[in-house]
Length: 305
Image (cartoon, rainbow, N blue to C red):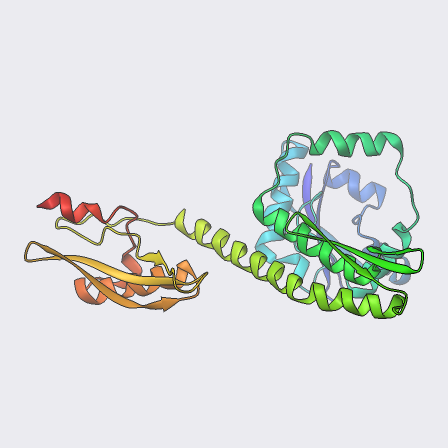
């Protein structure tokens, strides 16, 4: 088992792969790689224009696949024009993105194809027990709202009148239009009704994505040991007068009394926390890169008395 590199002598373009063959077996078989683009160039230029060399010998095929992925990541082959490789690793497709034409062609090819009952059953079993997150629900809600406006399937004609049924935040809303209206006027009314709803859905998705980013950042918090009382509050509180905004504040124990410093209003928790952290660094004269905000409660100061 080997990890190999095939080089196009004419253009300098390379291909890194792995195989269960030995070097002698690969030479005897005329094996130079499995890439389609590489094979096209071999058929066009001939195998004499390519150099086949061993990068590393491995004891097992699994180890060879792992080392192949290592060399892919090391040279960032998927993003480089000097490599035939379009993905990282033997099986995965990390780093490869389809072009616009490729995506459209794949979409057209999949249209009208019905899945086998066994395939549908396997997909159904795979999804069982998975509870969607609030962010996933918000994205699905937004996608359905846009699809409703685009396809206008929620418009029904009942006798001489028209009916429009919308689902907003899980509640059904019905509108009825008289004989003086036609399909286009009802469709325009649908657009007018859904425009603010879609805007609210988009704001929900954006806010939840921001909260998720903050949670990921919180997992990376490191606390620097400190001998004296340090900042022990979350650094923000919800602004009741204005929704989805947060007030940044700094709590400190001065001469036995707790004092809160107001630092401003921000659109996200992350921005409010960052303002508090920077203020803390200025007050305590701590290097910004070596300090973090401690998530405890403001009651910490009261317990000191």
